[in-house]
Length: 313
Image: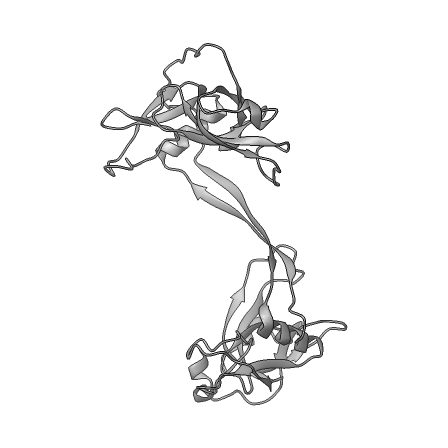
């Protein structure tokens, strides 16, 4: 059995979101070294604040200031901090009920070791030196044995309110395509496209999934398809992707390779973007040393009739 492939993969993108009035005030308050909670109808103070009561679903909007000191309600020690976490040395994840709050806030506690951390210990906020209106304006918590500080009773109104945030999202993992797609990828390195046929419905799937998505049975019979195919549908890309050396606009299409019962996707080149059309006959273009087609170009054949590919849209 051929070796199953695997490779590290990173999915990363900036997540942009707008803030409602409660979250806007909360994050703006952190920028100004003020911690705000929200009051419920039954008198509870929720920190972090939310816009709806989690019990009654009632709209919430009465903001109240709470102290930057509090009590650890539970904790877990982090022996090996990961990239992007609040501290780069071992620390404790803690839930802290700030003085004046009825719920706990999750953050990091800077402590020399797990032996000094305990439920019930007193802590205070350590503010970040540079604050922008984000949860990271709280750099972490630190042990504190002083008195509860006086608070001014801020009402949540600030100048230059934070109205939106951009949070980087990233996922690092090892991806394995499995037996069927490993064989597919290996065949591409020899400039062949190989799918698998379902023993029940006899459809050929490219790329193969290892099982028929319609019948649910295992597929193992390999079938070489293409290399030519038909554009079934397409889109014009007008936004340049990061780290992709392709000038916009360009066309990305679903292509039904001859002999396949599933359309795969690929870039269309060798033709002006506004001349690409459904039914266009295309063939792969390989670069020197490439392990997969760089793009597909027109073959010069007449366009395929709609009835020949309509089931693959």
